Image (tube, rainbow, N blue to C red; front, side, top):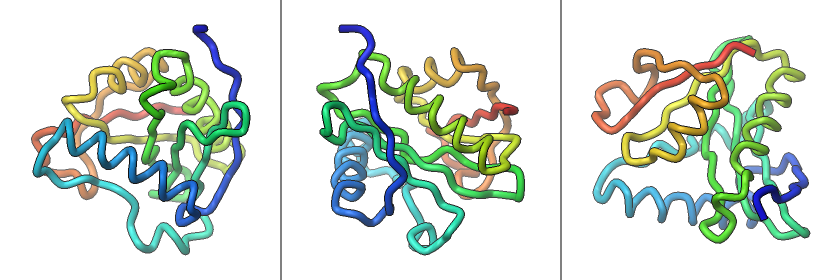
Length: 154
């Protein structure tokens, strides 16, 4: 099966489901970057009304997540993109990214930025194939030798 239909919902980033997905994401990142800092959510993201956390489900099962963090009035950062291991290679990340971009547009964002890592070639491939262009470092990631930066105009 090369295309799995997903349903999407916007949920609280501190919900039980969101925390479980984020824990799996962090575990995956720690295997790729042992001993390195993980740029996750900030405590203020939990209470920020502009922060958008998306859970993707297949047959009701939470299988992926992603988020949008407001950087400026018309700029958001894509955060916490993750697909569970058993569901990778089925086009879920592309569907999730498309949903995040659509949500960003309807939220008034005109530019999306993101940071991903040098040891995540599948993520880099996704973003480049989706029209994201590499940019200089920004924000809290400055100085991280494993970080790559991208943006896309919506």
